[in-house]
Figure (tube, rainbow, N blue to C red):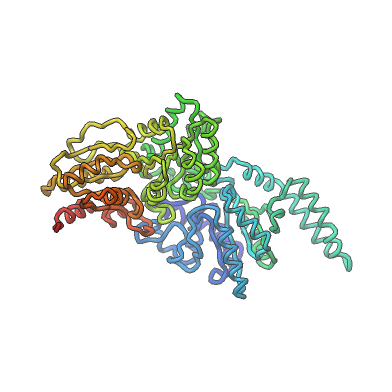
Length: 616
């Protein structure tokens, strides 16, 4: 296609993205920003042979459109439809399942080295955002690739954003690079003109290299990418197709590691997304004319409730500080960051640093609350265990997006935290049934003199107003103590639920009561330590015990109860209801819950079969 036709194609792609994502929801702003870059990559490289790694992967929609999947966008992120991230099972051009940040350079380097060892010849490209450069893994990859002089191309997509706006040293450094475009133009002109001088041109170019490098340091102090061993080119307008294509054509013929600095605008071409890129980073379905979401945008989310709860406490206790990993708004800390700016810390996309940094704050007498998504927090497992818990430091982990998160799929489901945290000695783990209990748990965590975690799901904050009738009076929160919500001493089965599953348990109990099965419902409150007294009493009464959790079965809450009773030599009939030990696909949360038997009807059905089983 001609450059002009390619430019027209970019308009069609943007129209297509807006008209489809407004129906399904998804990552809009980041994809609008990489339209020209993706078109240029597909123009220059052989997509069936060359390999492109998309860091994080939520900017892969345009790539999917250009690889024949446009007809599937009506089912984007829906159960049974296409993923919103690269998926190696979906198409051969998706070379890597990337859902977390900063990994593309290391993975691309590994493939490039494997290519060379195998004697093959194809291009390897990593597309990484400037936000991902706040993650240490990116520098580990850059350092190693530069040292080995691996033949690969790294494209730095610089849009000044991660999910929240970048405001760190990396952002400031890239800003200097963006304003130094005159240096790069001058450098290439000098080389080109010197090289044309007969007989002495090439030697003059080599001799002038030191001089032009001095010019570089004068304009951009410390050119870090060249110091790491990369040939650096840029900054380049990421929306200028002709310039992009020319640069990529040249880069694929160069030896060694190349870094191309591309400047783009997040949300490009859709005014609402350009103006509010954070809101349209991962949006629900919306009205394309007004940009207003269709899912009750003004309803309080769990993230909002968590941020408000800690902010209320911060007004009473000056020791409280909050730490986030480049997701200030997403985790409900926008107002906290504004009002208590000196007590708020955005660590960037660097969860390991965020946790260890919080440990240092606690050592200094502060009471840090660390707000991180469940699936991202697992990247800091070692730091949680050794830097915080082994030292018994009073750090509170506010674990957002715990449990199944729906459309983001397998790389984002927070269904492993009860397993990877539950066995850490001394770590208290809580899960609220509703927003009011979340507030009470933050108060408890502040008073607790040790490490603790509060996990809560994605979506609108629940209030326990629906479900079974006859709810018993709420008790105050005590360490390791559960709360009976329904039923008494004559129950035939006890449903012991964690967090959001309490609502499911109450609804299932209503269904079971109508079937003539006397059912009790217990809000576990604590996943660690477990309420041993309640468990022993239930087992001694001979009732059947069913555990419900928004976590995988292995190593979860239910299995810890199983192990406890077995260790005590207590015989009891137990059923653990949880997500299977598998990487669960993407789709609407309610659809997935029903599909896996975790909605109220599915739970009631499983319990009914369990109760009817004969015991010998």
